[in-house]
Length: 174
Image (cartoon, rainbow, N blue to C red):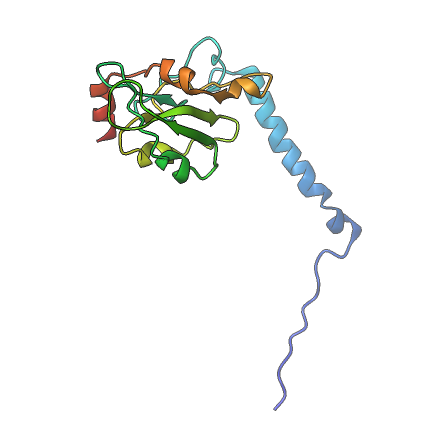
């Protein structure tokens, strides 16, 4: 028993069809039409006023990191390495030491976050059992010309304040 074979004619064999010039010109016409439309009436562009008008940041926006403190001003972080272990980008570096403020836990002597390696996934916040690290600063624009300012240390992470109150933060997470 022989198989039935159907031979199809191959399309696109002429020079006009192989170069796809007509399709390229159609694409360029669409691009040019959008350019002219936006050039003549740019009121519908969403990013036109960005530098002057800052966007409204929602409560659960993952901005830059910060470390939180207890009501008495002591650091909540106990250097348990959960955030460092859970970080997929491996951008958190912690060194633990003895606590000097009278609490029974240990505390970090060094806590660095490399913002250039961070992917802002929020896994460090989810992993922290003490709620010591948060990403609720409202800082969304992180710019610089050198690498070193992007490595945020312990003092800078503690000095960064949250953009929202505790009630807003808890309500936004529900």
